[in-house]
Amino acid sequence: MEKLIINRGTWVCGNHFKGKSQLLNSAGQRCCLGFLGKHIGLDDKFAKLTSFPSYVKNHTQWPERLFEYANQAEKAYGLLWQGDSETAPDDIREDWIKEGFKTILGFDVEFTGEYP
Image 1: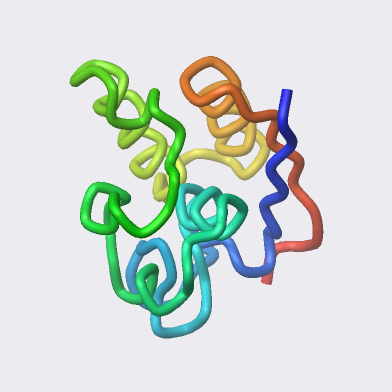
Image 2: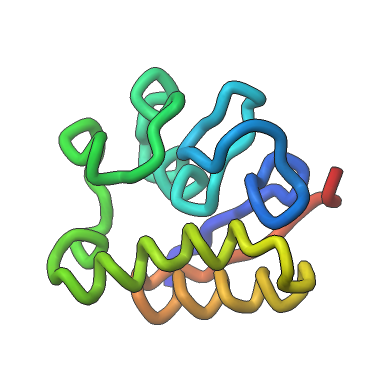
C-alpha cells in the first residue's frame, strides 16, 4: 500500500488551522486531500484556495476511486469534514483519516511533526 505523509504542523484540521479548509489555503496549510494532491503531483498553483479535488480534477491523476462512484466520492469528501471536526480529539481524528484513506483510497497515512 502506498504511503501518504501528513505533517501535523501544516494540516488544516480541528482547532489547528488558520484560514479555510482547502487543498492549500492562504496560510500555506493543506487539508488531508490537499496532502494527497501534493503527493500525486498537483501543482500548488491549482491547489491554492480550492476546496475540492473535483475542481482541479484535470490537473493531476487523482485516485480513480475518489471520483468513480457517487458513494465513494461522498465517503472521500467525508474525510474533509472528519478532519475539520473541532470536537474530536486529535488521536481520534487521525484514526478516522488513516482508516478512511486506507479503505476508500488505498493509502497508508503516516502523521509526522507536531501540531502548532
